[in-house]
Each structure stands twice: as structure tokens, then as C-alpha cells.
Image (cartoon, rainbow, N blue to C red; front, side):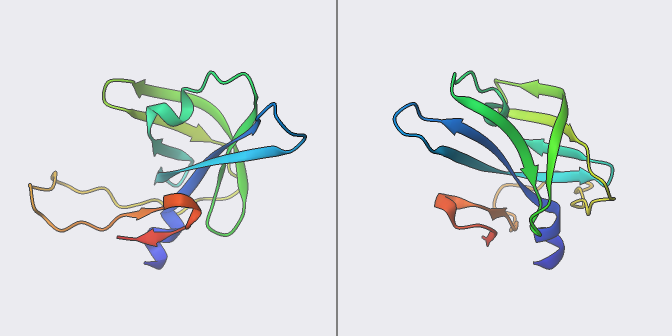
Length: 121
């Protein structure tokens, strides 16, 4: 769990709802795939056209926040995107499988459902 948690990060947008004076977060999960800051996430997470968005960043399990410096690739159809963040230290990356899992293979996933952070399923 510890190594999975360190490779799992949150990508978030900060937005102005237009109905109050507060800024609000919208948080999604993503995973670090290389120690130099390559992060895999969903395309719909970074493809935001909301007018109230004030910023977007990635935060690690220990509370460090890093800017997204570029979107390297993305597919709306596959709902996947590869982004690069600028980190001030090497990051723990998730190990990538050498072969794709088969249907019904057991896998582990860390996610952040309904603001419950770092849930292992």
C-alpha cells in the first residue's frame, strides 16, 4: 500500500462557482509513471473548458503540490492523457506491468472516491 500510495497522486482544479466568494476544488486521481514527473490521468480531467477555473495542479500523498507544465498526449476517445509535472525531487513511480492483465485477473487500485482519499480497492 505504501509504494502504491506514493505513486498515486491527485490532480485538481480550483474553480470559482460564480455563486459564492469561495474557491472550490475538483479532485481526481492519477498515477506517476516515471520519477521525472510523467503522470497518467484521464483526458476528461485535463480537458476542462469551465470559465471559472483558476488553476490546475498535482498533489502528492505528503501534500507537495506541483504545476502541470505540459500535456504530452491525450485521447478523448480512450479517456487517457499523459502530462508532465515540474517536481523539485525525484518521485516514486508505479511499476508498469510487462503484460496486460487478462479478464478476471486480480488487480489493486488506489482511488479517491467522493473525497475519501487513498482508498485501496
